[in-house]
Image (tube, rainbow, N blue to C red; front, side):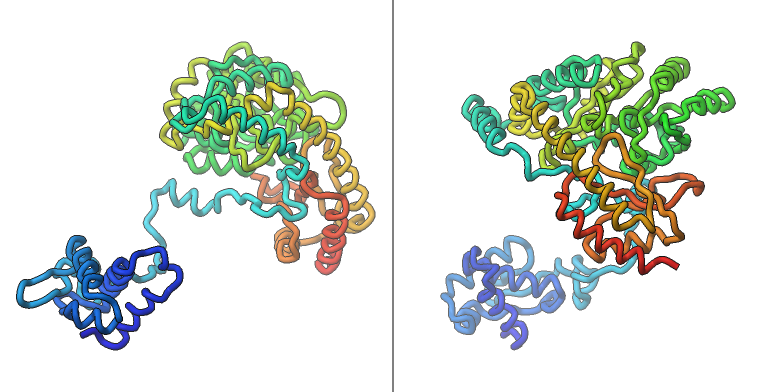
Length: 498
């Protein structure tokens, strides 16, 4: 017979409400299997006779027989005619010894590849699942026209029926590729065709593809300083050597690319830019520098990776045309996403590629996630073509401009003794520079504990020659929400002042 503790363990499986969906024999079978796996029932140990165990558990003998039969099929027990049932000798292989528990927690660092260690040590990217003031890069979703989206989705389901449930083209469905190309040509001055659009899940996926398909480990890539942390981490994970290039009010100092390439034996294979609205400074790359970086890419046969970050949300005049639209040599990869302009849960982004890169990038994409969801793609295509995307962006542009102004007013009213806001001409976040000797990391940490999400500026810089402070997102937060959080933040900064 089982020992008392073993019998009670089996009874616990029978009464545990989380196992109610399982048949009775399966609960008994799994309970005994667990006793074997954790070493409580060792190799060669006899099991109770089915009649005796049935009586102890107050179940039918057939139920026990069914449990034992399944354990026998899985190899956990042996059934010997005339002798009974025994824990199989095979279970020694589970832990190396029949007396050593199989399930145990290891405190050792797992053996990872060099790339795996780089990714793990970087901490990955932090998505704000439940956004709190002032998480940067988070759009307002409470204003989204859900009824319109729902109506378009119903149209898609009615038209395509079960056909839409199958695998879709890894490059993206043609209606969405056509809608994207028309949109970026009209709104961003791009030169796109449906054949050159690759639909992805996010701009982060696009950056990962670029890092791994266009460059080899050890290759150099020019990046902005400061730079979007998602790009830096994607490049580091691919083993690239990131060469930081400083900025001024007109964006990246592109002459550094030409100077470095002339003096270096191995010129950088690519440059990463956020020219329309630099992250995090908000600077716009001047036209002469756009033309200069295109000439650099042509001369050295390098790539321009253009992340059109926050380009939709300019609050004074129309945004500058994208670099891709100026590049007649097809050296630019244009990256866009609907995470900011619509909602993060959509999980759709895209690249506009040089013709020669479409096939390699599409093949590489099949190794990551295969394809994007068909229903979302076709619904988004109709949303764009029906003019709903443009209308939504116009509405949100006005909302975000007002919220930016509210945040500036609140900062000057409550935080003027601690920070100076760097008011952006567009975008969804605002850099704030410390004007007192306040420890940045501690300020960010204390704010997080108080329910406020800030992004420290130091993590975005490669060099140590920069001012400290933090980035404050304002798009997703109503004025009264910002005011409450600002007053909390004022108390935190006050407590850190010397």
